[in-house]
Length: 143
Image 1 (tube, helix red, strand yellow):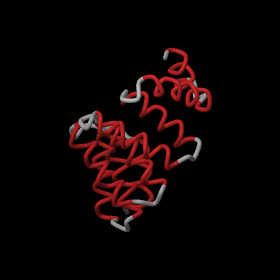
Image 2 (cartoon, rainbow, N blue to C red):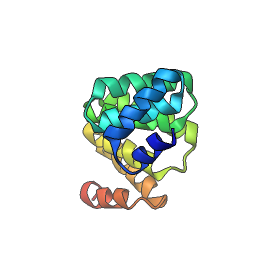
Image 3 (spheres, rainbow, N blue to C red):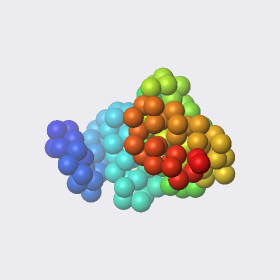
Image 4 (cartoon, helix red, strand yellow):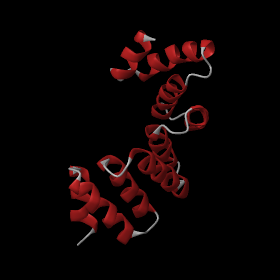
């Protein structure tokens, strides 16, 4: 597990995925292993495998906010913006209102849905939480 975590944290996602495969084979109901392996799949553009792992992890641990955030990002990459919006809202609800990254991501999803007013509202809130990325989006989209 430590070797898989080191590979994951250093960005060696191919090695990490291989090691998490071995760990999941032994502990198939370990939500953290599934989530991390899912992230490795997502980076490797194996989106269906990533989605399967994310879904299983959320089923095992439905109150873990960052799992919903990760799945929202995957849905965003898959152009499934309604699903992404639903998941990022779940992440915000579970975490609370103080996560600038979540509100920034919600703003980006609203942009994709052509909901500029809602996007700007999210970017403005995220910028109060010190999200420099949100501040840049305000300059571009919220004049």
